[in-house]
Image (cartoon, rainbow, N blue to C red; front, top):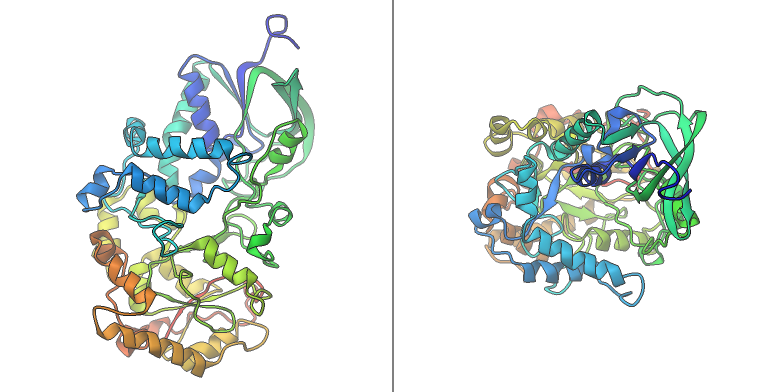
Length: 512
């Protein structure tokens, strides 16, 4: 196949119709290029994994930050980024990563916000503080809040680019190839010139639901260039285990899955087989606060708790996790601790212990479907439920009542009994847990403390965004006034409930 002698199906083939693929297609078609957009799922899945996301975007020194009194800068953000990335392969695998990262932080501190606004994407007035860090100035984490949530969540971020793609199709610049699964990149003289693959049987399943892989034919497309934007590996646990890094210990026996089944990573091996160089496959990101979705959409559907800083976190044997393994601080550091500490590595769970006051103020759930007020851009509803409302937000309350990973009780001893009921054998001692919680509670009497977590809570509440809508007033975990009302004490699932699975990697939320 040669340019100028063989008619091509498009100027560029984009493999993957997630957010990255849609943005790439828009950049190309807006410049008059013809695009073939190829994806193994049906039209209902345009936007891919991003559709289901919370829609948090990294911005630096934004108007939202400045209005909230947050002093951010490129220098601070770039220092934070390097501390989190820990580039240690700069002569090889990180050589381009360092350059990309710096360019991205410059973009986030410059034109990114105006570029997004140009596509109709706007933000909540509050700014979240994700990954608060490892408690060092030079290490992992965000020194200041930078998590800008889009009105519409991930659904709203995806929407304009879906609209552009459909308009480009009407204009004859883009052709959708839904249910086309790429099996091979066609490379000539070192240049990708096309794709070959399998036409899959029609499947009208709803967005996110696992679809069939029944073959009904073959296809081949040619172009001047091929762009692969097929996402990650989160739903393919075999690949996760294959590249699980030694530094994170052993992978859990079982995992919940935060992404639909089509996030299968298959194009990575296909690309590598065609001569593409893949780098840093061991640098993966997993959340330790995953819980089973009581109302799943895809197989093994898990939801991540987005915690504030006040819950106490214990390992499977009932020992409080050491700093910086605090809720919302250092995800990978916590995962490393849980998977490399010898006497707990065999257990796939840990525990949050918290109060009614904490869950009402601090618990959020990741995902567009778990945040219907923001997804619907319902500003009045957001203010009513998140800022002025009493009680846990509706989706959180539903997990509290129906989730297999939540238990409640009126006192610590009964709580521990129920916690032990979720594992094959009793691993927790109520007296030992009480001793640790009481020691922490003694630190609440003053506005200063030697406890790193209590220091972090008070530091967070100096930020008005956290004080108003994200971080509970410091209080004793064992204060009876902070515990659950009687109506919640039936939230513990029946031990015979089929959702119960003691080996699930989970961080159940509980309070006494």
